[in-house]
Length: 323
Ligand SMILES: [Mn+2]
Image 1 (cartoon, rainbow, N blue to C red):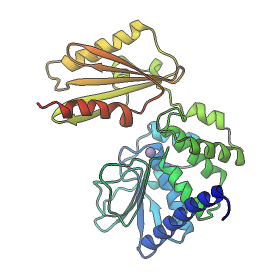
Image 2 (cartoon, protein in one colour):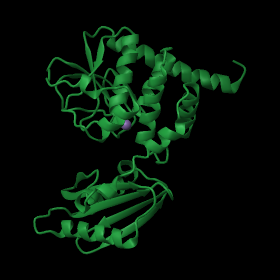
Image 3 (cartoon, rainbow, N blue to C red):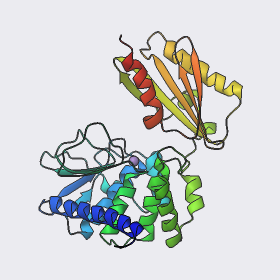
């Protein structure tokens, strides 16, 4: 090639072709492959699983997507059924099997029975996995990585599937506002939406996933999306709200007082409660570190990621202090 841009594009294409070949080679001789998303399944895990099962079938590989946990008519279920034609119940599987071949999407290790034969994930970790096939890199969604493979395989993508890819990307990045966003991928999402006549702006608004605080009580508000962490034997919890504009100071103070009472309660073993408000109107992340005797407020520019930006800093603090 004489043109530098073309040869760069070609090397990326070559790399994807190699990856596709490896995917086919490692799976073609397997009797049956079960694709699974992580427990407490989210939109990207469902849709990337369904997309991968379609790609593998197209490649004549015997693969099915299954959901190994009881399905709850929750957030994920609502978004998936409102925006796509995917019915999560048709993938529900109740039995664990020792002899199952598992292919992990949107996570890299599992507690389910079976042998892991492959993994596609967009959360690179310190320790690399040793599965026969693995495609792990930073990306806005696992569904986007599956799309890259579909594209190189000349998979005949439908409008419905293009929508599934865009929705996964938007949900995982707060409609492309979060720090997990990869700008080149946003361009691809826009091109796909245009090509398949999808209402990009409608999807963007929908995928902001605002927390319906007007329908929630204070306990629900202060524990929305709650996660628990154990940092060096220090127990920490986090919760978050996704809002469009901030409530008044009095309301926030009421929430913080409530959180403080939870941290300092007699039976509480929690040392810190990290309460996060993502204000998608002003593009600011408010972080409140609530401890027994004081609360610290940190204002971050942009919509941060709880898992990638905020909690690792908290973890560092507990892991550096010798206790
Ligand atoms: Mn994901």
